[in-house]
Length: 235
Image 1 (cartoon, rainbow, N blue to C red):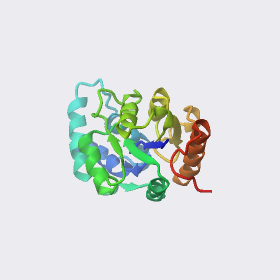
Image 2: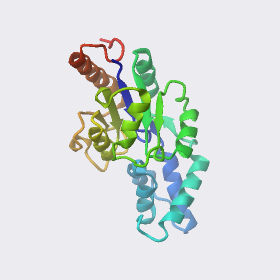
Image 3: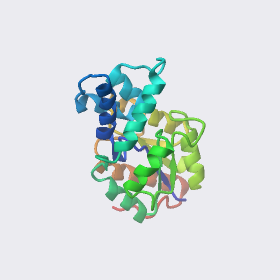
């Protein structure tokens, strides 16, 4: 039985925070406000427009002005989203290792398709990525399990043989609700919270810690099923 490794995008696979923060500061610029320091906005990057607009403008989603500002933010972000975005150090090597070791991998993000796919192609991830599920692929977004269950279905693998890695509490909640093992990406944008409190099966404090955790999880599946779960794990 093969194994499926699914990743959140922002803050887990890719470091997108600089461009997101720039788009948030642009909303302040429109209003004659000085830019906020990058370090102030970075922890909000995994919460998308809602989190960044709250941090930048103290604007809640319930505000009458919110939707118009959100649309402007998304428009501005789309113009610059690949200027500084990069895979986290070690991630490209990890994805290559998963490929050579026979694992199936994919992406599940709350980012919309119109923003996700250009970035996936820009980063060269589309060739070996089996499935990409975005915030508008299913009727629900994380922490609802629907996007993860859809990804497993599209990949043709059961949730019980799937692992989800993400840097936000919603990622772990969604993974657990879908019946998947979970790893919290502690190197991501979670500095305002302690991922050890999220109830994940494990926490990776650096991208380099992901492979040993994935290997251990795959060996657990192999022991449970009596079948190789994703190629022959390296020693």
